[in-house]
Amino acid sequence: MPRSNKSSAFTTSGDDGKPFGPPLIGALLRMPWDAVQQHMLTRLHGSGFADFDAAYLTVFQYPGPQGARPSELAARLRVSKQALNYLLGELERLGYLERRADPDDLRSKRIALTPRGSAAVGVIREAVGEVETAWARQLGPGRFDDLRNLLIELNGVT
Image (cartoon, rainbow, N blue to C red; front, side):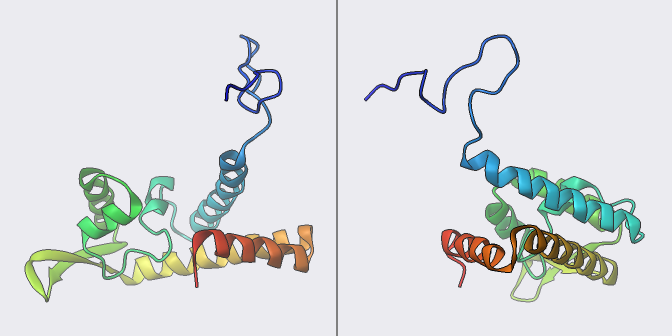
Protein backbone atom coordinates (compact mmCIF):
# COMPACT_ATOMS: atom_id res chain seq x y z
CA MET A 1 0.00 0.00 0.00
CA PRO A 2 1.57 3.35 -0.99
CA ARG A 3 2.38 5.80 1.75
CA SER A 4 1.71 9.48 1.68
CA ASN A 5 4.89 11.51 1.95
CA LYS A 6 3.14 13.95 4.28
CA SER A 7 2.71 11.51 7.17
CA SER A 8 5.55 9.11 6.56
CA ALA A 9 8.83 8.97 8.41
CA PHE A 10 10.31 8.49 4.94
CA THR A 11 9.37 11.94 3.64
CA THR A 12 11.86 13.65 1.46
CA SER A 13 13.22 17.06 2.20
CA GLY A 14 13.83 19.89 -0.15
CA ASP A 15 17.19 21.44 -0.76
CA ASP A 16 17.13 22.96 2.74
CA GLY A 17 19.37 20.22 4.17
CA LYS A 18 16.90 19.22 6.87
CA PRO A 19 16.44 15.53 7.76
CA PHE A 20 13.89 13.41 5.93
CA GLY A 21 11.82 13.11 9.10
CA PRO A 22 12.23 12.00 12.69
CA PRO A 23 15.06 9.54 13.37
CA LEU A 24 14.21 5.90 12.78
CA ILE A 25 15.40 3.03 14.96
CA GLY A 26 18.71 2.65 13.10
CA ALA A 27 19.69 6.23 13.87
CA LEU A 28 18.40 5.92 17.43
CA LEU A 29 20.67 2.91 17.96
CA ARG A 30 23.63 4.45 16.11
CA MET A 31 23.73 7.74 18.01
CA PRO A 32 24.35 6.16 21.44
CA TRP A 33 26.84 3.75 19.83
CA ASP A 34 28.73 6.74 18.42
CA ALA A 35 28.88 8.22 21.93
CA VAL A 36 30.19 4.93 23.35
CA GLN A 37 32.86 4.72 20.63
CA GLN A 38 33.97 8.29 21.26
CA HIS A 39 34.27 7.64 25.00
CA MET A 40 36.27 4.44 24.36
CA LEU A 41 38.68 6.34 22.10
CA THR A 42 39.03 9.22 24.55
CA ARG A 43 39.85 6.81 27.38
CA LEU A 44 42.23 4.76 25.19
CA HIS A 45 44.10 7.85 24.05
CA GLY A 46 44.28 9.15 27.63
CA SER A 47 45.60 5.79 28.84
CA GLY A 48 48.64 5.64 26.59
CA PHE A 49 47.05 4.14 23.48
CA ALA A 50 47.28 7.30 21.36
CA ASP A 51 47.88 5.20 18.23
CA PHE A 52 44.55 3.38 18.60
CA ASP A 53 42.34 4.43 15.67
CA ALA A 54 38.53 4.32 15.59
CA ALA A 55 38.68 1.70 12.81
CA TYR A 56 40.45 -0.72 15.17
CA LEU A 57 37.39 -0.80 17.44
CA THR A 58 35.72 -2.99 14.81
CA VAL A 59 38.27 -5.76 15.44
CA PHE A 60 37.81 -5.46 19.21
CA GLN A 61 34.00 -5.70 19.13
CA TYR A 62 32.49 -8.12 21.62
CA PRO A 63 33.39 -10.95 22.00
CA GLY A 64 36.77 -9.84 20.64
CA PRO A 65 39.29 -11.36 18.26
CA GLN A 66 41.16 -13.64 20.69
CA GLY A 67 41.54 -17.13 19.25
CA ALA A 68 39.58 -16.43 16.07
CA ARG A 69 40.74 -17.29 12.58
CA PRO A 70 40.92 -14.14 10.43
CA SER A 71 38.39 -15.56 7.94
CA GLU A 72 35.94 -16.35 10.77
CA LEU A 73 36.42 -12.91 12.27
CA ALA A 74 35.85 -11.22 8.90
CA ALA A 75 32.57 -13.12 8.50
CA ARG A 76 31.45 -12.27 12.06
CA LEU A 77 32.27 -8.58 11.58
CA ARG A 78 30.78 -8.56 8.05
CA VAL A 79 33.88 -7.05 6.48
CA SER A 80 35.93 -8.31 3.59
CA LYS A 81 38.93 -10.52 4.32
CA GLN A 82 41.11 -7.90 2.65
CA ALA A 83 39.82 -5.09 4.88
CA LEU A 84 40.22 -7.20 8.00
CA ASN A 85 43.72 -8.30 7.02
CA TYR A 86 44.69 -4.66 6.60
CA LEU A 87 43.38 -3.85 10.11
CA LEU A 88 45.06 -6.93 11.58
CA GLY A 89 48.34 -5.91 9.94
CA GLU A 90 48.11 -2.45 11.46
CA LEU A 91 47.20 -3.83 14.90
CA GLU A 92 50.04 -6.32 14.65
CA ARG A 93 52.51 -3.58 13.64
CA LEU A 94 51.36 -1.50 16.65
CA GLY A 95 51.77 -4.44 19.02
CA TYR A 96 48.11 -5.13 19.90
CA LEU A 97 47.90 -8.65 18.48
CA GLU A 98 49.71 -11.40 16.66
CA ARG A 99 48.65 -13.89 14.02
CA ARG A 100 49.96 -17.29 15.10
CA ALA A 101 49.87 -20.70 13.46
CA ASP A 102 46.68 -22.59 14.23
CA PRO A 103 47.66 -25.74 16.14
CA ASP A 104 44.67 -27.58 14.59
CA ASP A 105 45.45 -26.54 11.00
CA LEU A 106 48.99 -25.34 10.27
CA ARG A 107 47.76 -23.72 7.03
CA SER A 108 45.62 -21.31 9.08
CA LYS A 109 46.32 -18.56 11.57
CA ARG A 110 44.67 -17.64 14.85
CA ILE A 111 44.61 -14.21 16.43
CA ALA A 112 46.28 -13.78 19.80
CA LEU A 113 46.15 -10.58 21.81
CA THR A 114 49.46 -9.33 23.12
CA PRO A 115 49.72 -7.90 26.64
CA ARG A 116 49.27 -4.45 25.04
CA GLY A 117 46.10 -5.66 23.28
CA SER A 118 44.74 -7.15 26.51
CA ALA A 119 45.45 -3.88 28.31
CA ALA A 120 43.56 -1.98 25.60
CA VAL A 121 40.58 -4.34 26.02
CA GLY A 122 40.66 -3.56 29.74
CA VAL A 123 40.47 0.18 29.04
CA ILE A 124 37.67 -0.37 26.50
CA ARG A 125 35.63 -2.36 29.03
CA GLU A 126 36.21 0.27 31.74
CA ALA A 127 35.12 3.02 29.34
CA VAL A 128 31.92 1.18 28.43
CA GLY A 129 31.27 0.60 32.13
CA GLU A 130 31.57 4.34 32.70
CA VAL A 131 29.03 5.02 29.95
CA GLU A 132 26.66 2.46 31.47
CA THR A 133 27.00 4.14 34.88
CA ALA A 134 26.30 7.57 33.37
CA TRP A 135 23.27 6.29 31.46
CA ALA A 136 21.94 4.53 34.56
CA ARG A 137 22.19 7.87 36.42
CA GLN A 138 20.48 9.69 33.56
CA LEU A 139 17.67 7.18 33.04
CA GLY A 140 17.43 5.82 36.55
CA PRO A 141 18.57 2.30 37.40
CA GLY A 142 15.23 0.62 36.62
CA ARG A 143 14.83 2.20 33.20
CA PHE A 144 18.48 1.50 32.36
CA ASP A 145 18.00 -2.15 33.36
CA ASP A 146 14.89 -2.25 31.14
CA LEU A 147 16.89 -0.82 28.23
CA ARG A 148 19.70 -3.30 28.75
CA ASN A 149 17.27 -6.25 29.04
CA LEU A 150 15.42 -5.19 25.88
CA LEU A 151 18.69 -4.97 23.96
CA ILE A 152 19.69 -8.40 25.28
CA GLU A 153 16.36 -9.77 24.10
CA LEU A 154 16.61 -8.14 20.66
CA ASN A 155 20.15 -9.46 20.21
CA GLY A 156 19.30 -12.99 21.37
CA VAL A 157 22.04 -12.89 24.00
CA THR A 158 21.72 -15.39 26.81
